[in-house]
Amino acid sequence: WQRLSHECLQSGTMNRAALQQMNRGRAFTAARAMPVARPVTTTAAPRRTPLNVKALRVNNVEIPNSKRVEISLQYIYGIGSTTAKAILRDTGVENKKTYELDEEDINKLREEVGKYTTESDLRRVISQNIKRLKDIQCYRGKRHIMGLPCRGQRTKTNARTKKGKVKTVAGKKK
Image (cartoon, rainbow, N blue to C red; front, side, top):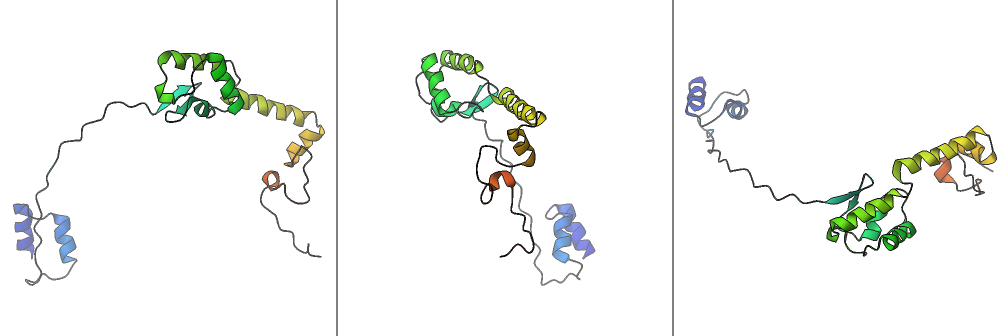
């Protein structure tokens, strides 16, 4: 077995791992066929395709290329459908697919979106407003602190979005 395995290793027909796996600690028998390793063919690396822009960056947000501009702008936090329509109206950009826009239209959109409070600035303003309500201990602030709805919704049933998962209390049956 050792002589045969040494010959196979020297000739390059099998590697050490294949020989050990084939034997698995048992004595070698002539009835077991010796697998012959096939020569490895190496192919050249595939050619890279030309650079393809998948998304357009507006206000540090990647908006999708395959959708219309009005829908793509809504991927920016703080811009909804009404604001997106207003942006298109103010800039005079046609509502076509985003990848069809030329550089001039893209710059117009970027300038117009820059006039609005969006993304991290808007998130910061909202969190500061909520913090102010909590600090002055008004009704809405207290509701935020308790994690309950603050716009008059009922809480005996429902309100699961704010309250979280149901916490079952023992002995609450009628």
